[in-house]
Image 1 (cartoon, rainbow, N blue to C red):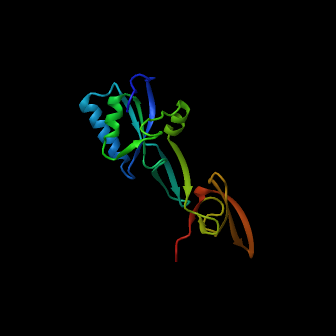
Image 2 (tube, one colour):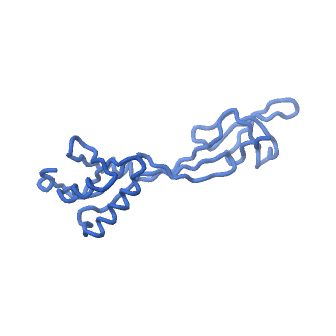
Image 3 (cartoon, rainbow, N blue to C red):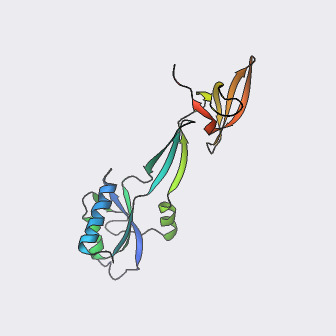
Length: 181
């Protein structure tokens, strides 16, 4: 601690380090303390940076929320002796990010980049997998997945028809992983 009150520059985003898996508990406990002690004028927002990942096996999609920075919680607060003490003594918090006991705030650009929730598509399919085509002209054909576009939206499937291997460009949604026999 020390002279937080003298060098205060207003509300900034700070990063608190937590035990692994304690991020949600720290957030809930801190929100309760803010409400019970009336600290809303010092601590304004608490975020756990997450991204939504859409896992796809071609036909079915499932949304999964994943922590971008496990073991870290972002807190928008006015750094003072009181606010530092409250956050630092929450069960599960190991400290603030910064040298020694001096927390270093994030820049506005860093905070915005971290806070903006992202959504990415992740396919469980990989090159070489056998797939069934479920939509389009080649529906009901099977083939080998040959290529996946960098954005994961388009694929090339090698289909054997009339004794020849033919590459077919398809949308990821048009295929499904071949069921194990």
